[in-house]
Image (cartoon, rainbow, N blue to C red):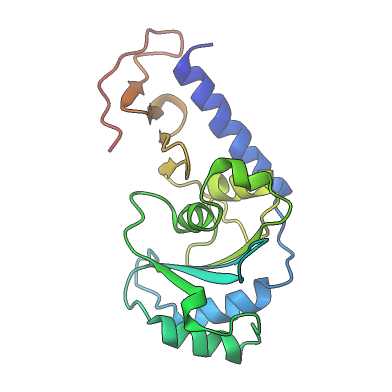
Length: 206
């Protein structure tokens, strides 16, 4: 199987797995309330607020927040509101991380990356994560990826995003069907002609 065909297969499998997503979690209601307090909707519906609660075997739990669209609250503001919505495990503002530039990652994947640190840790039974997304809703790619690793999250939207980047490999999936392009490790591939045509390099994976 050629590289591009394998990438298409991965995209299809990932999106299909969204139907198995876990939408029940111990913290999702409280994380949603926390995110809704800070979320500011825009006219085009592009702003997104994602709030994750991470758990570790040898460290205190943390809240990781990613905001796409203004304003960005302070750690102290998130800490105070987290206590108000009943997230009692957060006792210091230092347990909160606010992500800046996510380098093309969707907010949910940026949180996954920040909490787990490496792909190998995704299967660590002593670690855990729940994510609430306010705004667009979780895309099928993010939902399917989180479903694979048992990460509870809020509702999945029906429409797929045009771009999705893997949080640990940096693989870039763009478009779908005959408009599909793929890039990884500095190499890029674009579909040439019909599905049986030869592949060509040159698509900028940016």
